Length: 106
Length: 118
Image (cartoon, rainbow over all chains, first blue to last red):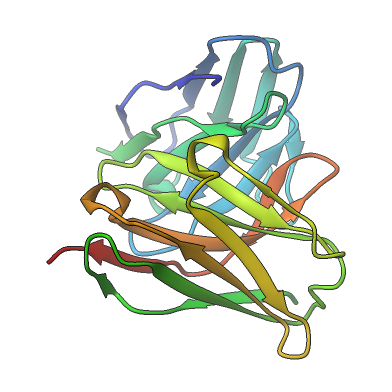
C-alpha cells in the first residue's frame, strides 16, 4: 500500500503562514487530496487533486505538488484553523490516508 | 444539499458482527458512489469499501473476507457489515459520498463510534 507520511504536529501564531507536508512512498500523480478535521466533527474536503479548492473553502487554503511530495498552505492562519489535517491519495489501490498533522495556534 | 448520517450499536462483542446504517438525504444513492471509512484511535484512517449507483461493490483487500456493503434504495440507505470483529476494529466509522472521478470523499457523515469489547 502507498504510505503517506505527515509531520505529527505544528504550532503557529495567527496571521502567519503555515505549510503542511505529505510525502508518498510512491508516485500518486496529482491525485492527492487534503481534509480538515476539527475536534468532534467529521473530515471536510479542502483541496482535491493537489491544488484545486473545494467548494466553500476560503482562498487562504492552497495546495501544491505532484508525484510524491505535496504541500497544504494556509496563509494567513486564523484561530478557527485549529484542526488536524489529513492527506489522502487516490492514484494507487487501495486508497490511503496520512496519519494527520495537528495544527495548534500559539 | 446531500447529508449522511451513520447509526448503529456503539458496542460490539469480539467475534460478533458490526452492523452500521448510513442514511442519505438530499441525493439518491442510485446515483454516484457511497463508501465507508474508519478512523482508529491515534488517527490512522482506512478506506473500507464502497457501493456504486448500480449496486456493485469494491472492498479494501485487507478486509475482503470480512466486509459486506449493501443498500436499500427504497429507504435511500446503505449498510456496512463487518464480521468476526476484534478489539482492533474499535474505531469511528464514517460514511461518505465517493467522487469516482477524483477519488475524494465529500461530504462525510458525522461518524459512529464503535467499541469492540466483551
